[in-house]
Image 1 (cartoon, rainbow, N blue to C red):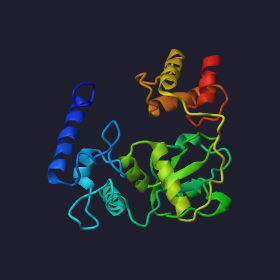
Image 2 (image 1 turned 180 degrees about the vertical axis):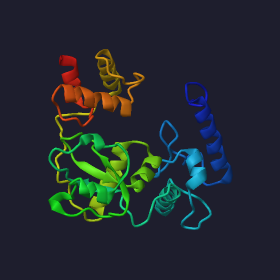
Image 3 (image 1 turned 120 degrees about the vertical axis):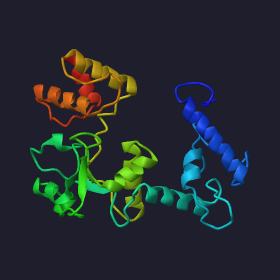
Image 4 (image 1 turned 90 degrees about the vertical axis):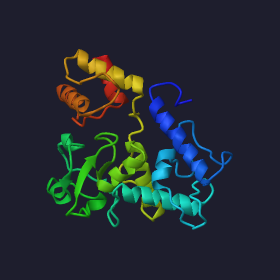
Length: 256
């Protein structure tokens, strides 16, 4: 059905043909080829073209079985990450604590050497020194200045290539840390400042544009121009200039 009509018809047709190739090779049967409505299949949630490119037969039975063979599923995921430039021995990232009067505009502004972040007063929870000092990292504030802060490395982008959503990649990294014995986050999550739905993000952009801020297209995508406009609004309102678009900022925009 995705290949028949709609804005992603070309994508849908390519996935249908790739799925037929999988069946033709005999890796699985139509009855076992279960997946989501958009074609993501098996434990790994590979779409058919991704399966053809990255799935592996780890147990050596002649079939790449991501539906019923855990070894194949895990090895296929590892192969995907390896080919997405995952660096062995390097973390995806870790939680950090920011100093008072920190310039929050630096969040998401690009990679800096870890030692440069250290010179800016960034530390690990408990005052520990930053690790991987020779590597480059970006500062991530997924919930703004009120929530936890993270330094993220190139491995974080490897996870994003698997699923291009910050919340997804962060969840994978934090869950992996807990499974390997790591503790909980030191900074609480601001549960009173929920993320915005797509319609609310569009309305937020429209409200900023109505105030004269340059935000580009009103598309619900919170890119750098929108975040820059948010920071300008926050500065005018005497708020922390973190560029975060949450429910509290949205309420402030609608009420002023």
